[in-house]
Every structure is written in C-alpha cells, then in structure tokens.
Image 1: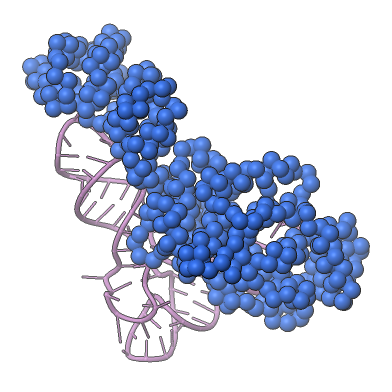
Image 2: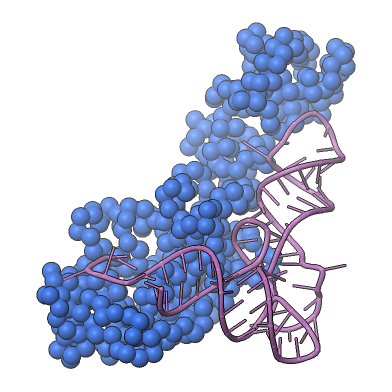
Length: 429
RNA sequence: GGCGGUAUCGUCUAGAGGCCUAGGACGUGGCCCUCUCAAGGCCAAAACACGGGUUCGAAUCCCGUUACCGCUACCA
C-alpha cells in the first residue's frame, strides 16, 4: 500500500516545477496500480497565508492538474484545517520535554545525533543534529511553521512516500526527527531535481512563462506538456522520448530513471515536441480541436483544410489561422518576409499575378496535378521561372512566404476564392 | 561561513568497469528535394569539470579540488 501526496502552495498559478512534481507522484501511483498494488494520491494544499484568497488559488491548481490529466483520490485537504491537531501535537512535544517554550513560541529540541535516510533518488543522505539549530514549530501566535505542519499532516494522511523538490533536502532531517519525536516511523523520501531557466537559475517569472496555464494559452497541448515535463529530470533509459499518452508514460515510468541533477527548461524543445504531438493527433482530431475557431465551416471542409496545413503547424493557433485564411474567413495579412518580397519589385509581383489570373480564369481542371502543369506553362510562356509565378500566388493567398506547394494551395482554396483573391492582390499591389 | 546536494555536447539525456573512436533528441551549420519551408531525407560541428587513486582496464568505483544549487527564518 502506498500513499503519496502532492502539496502545492496556493500562489495563483501552477508552476511547471510543481506540475512536474505532481506528475511524478501521479506516475508513481499509476505504475504501482498497474503492478496490482494499492496506491492512493492525496492532494494537500499548503494554505497558511490568510491574506490570499485560497478558494480561487486552489481552483487554479485544480484546473492545471485536470488539464494535464492528473487525477487525485483524496482531497484537496488544507493545511489550515489541521491547525488544532498541529497545536495538540506541539503541546505533546512540549509535555514530553522534546520541545520547549521560547519567547512565547514552541521550539523543537533537535537531538544531537546522526540523522540519515535512504533517499529514493539520491541514495543515502545524512546530516548531524549538531548542524541543525533548534527550530520553532509553533509561533507565538499559535500558528504552526511549515516543517511542523507538513509532518503532522503527512502523519494524519498516513503518507508513505514523499516525493518533492530537491530544495527540501535540507528540511528532511528536521522532519525526520519530528516524526520520531511524535512516535511515528518516517515515510520514504525522494527528492527530484529542480527545474532551471535557460540561464541556469531557478525558473522564475523573469524567464517568461512559468505556469502551466501560460503554456496552455500559448497553444501547448497537454499531452506535449506532460511528455516534456516527464523528461525533465527523468529518463526511461534508451533513446525513446516521445510518449503520446499518459498511459504510455505510466508503462515506462520508474523512480530509478529520475535524475539527480537539476534540468534546464528549454522552450524550443517543448515547441518541437508540441508539433510532434499535434501531427500525431491527425487531421481528424486537430479539426475538432479548432472547430470553435472556424465559424461553422462544414466538418469535412475543416478536416481537409487541417490536413493541408498540419505539417507546417506547431500549435492549434497556427492551424486555425492557416485554415481561416484558406477558407476565406480572414483576409491575408502580409508578414514581414512577404512584404519584403513584394516591396522588392511590386510591378513584377502584380504582373505575375495578372498573367496567372488570365491563365487560370478559363482553366477548369482544378486539381493539383493539372494546376502544376498549367502554372509551369504560364511561367514558361512569359519567360519566368516557376518561383516567380508561384511565390506571388502563395503570398497573395496566404500572406506568407511559407506554405504547402502552390498547386496544392490553389486546389485547397478552390477556384472561386483563389481567383478573387488573386485579382484583388494584382490590382492592389 | 556551516551543513547538504550536484557535476557527460549550448540544452534534455543514454551510459550502471571492457560493447565508448561516448549513442539519441532539441537547437545550430551544410547538402538534397524543390515554387517556399516552420515539412521530409542526408551529413557535420559539439561533451565525460580538474587532480589524484583503485584496477590489466574508469565517463562509470574512492578521495580531494573547483564550480553551481539548496538550507541555515516565529517563509513555504
């Protein structure tokens, strides 16, 4: 039977570091269940700051976890709700002489002995009591201090495995002596590496997006986020790194693969991984993902547009924008490179579009293969290179210098829409 | 300062004494494909922090040094 807990502070966001700790705990539970063991995931909120609006902040954590697909079995339990027990536990230590009063507060007397444990990820770690000062467990205002409250709560929740960030290693000996003083065998501890920003410093706001919600809004898929986070500080061994579902991850997960060293969060790799996940979903599922952004186009039409656009998209936003412009829902806005291309020789751009319009207006075999042949004939007839004809079309139709091949682009846009767009661009440029 | 943790390409990592001329991935550079590339294919540059041991043999084990990180609060 294992019971683990995830204990975030309600700070108004679910930090990627916290999300990853939650993920590791969750994975540990799921993997145990798969082996037929009883396993329980408890959610505990460290809500001690009365100034914060806990309900709202807790909501953010819950939302983040559910977006990632991380379910919990018990909770959320709140640290503040255990305050009577914390006080009673402190009184007990006071009564038994294991703690003493100091300026109105209760201070724990740290035993002068070796304090060691076998860390689940680091192996044996040991401290000596003489290096740890007696610390306050109950403040003068009778509120508990973190190191004491967690222990009391984890005992009450019968937690067997504490998986948390490396920054807690130095807290662990304090907590272990507290467990013993309270007459309870300490749980197993595992400290997972921290997540750093690209400058090697602890990931913080100044690194840009640090909350899972930020990435959600940027168009990162939850599967991609989970996949990426899992691989930050953990490795299945070998070369595998794409896991398209939580289920695959559970199958590969083991505490043994957890790294000891801190990992740098690389947004570029996340972006790549997101594109992989997006393509893996396929046109069908991506189409339903962007369904609410395409103004009620027929499903079948959305699906074929998505299929055309998917290979060059990294996020659902990319897909939606590309689909909309091809469907005629948005007028193409020339991006920087496209503007530069046109500006280089506006007359040539306009002329190329002119001859294309002329050649395509009477052309009815609107298939990729025929369009390709027709376009090449046009180019040759006017002494132009293929690119001098193709690129203006691409820009006029999408506003971008990058897209699927132009013949395919024309086919997917359709004759009527393409010609009117081309004519407009030929006249306006 | 004290205590603790960590140390393989720029980044994520494989590696658990010989399989390592150190593998993969992101990113970077080049080539191919080609009407474009944010698609696809191929190639390249790029790392065992340093110094001592142990061993026939060390990226892998031990010690030291250095660097980085954490804790050292009546913060969590």
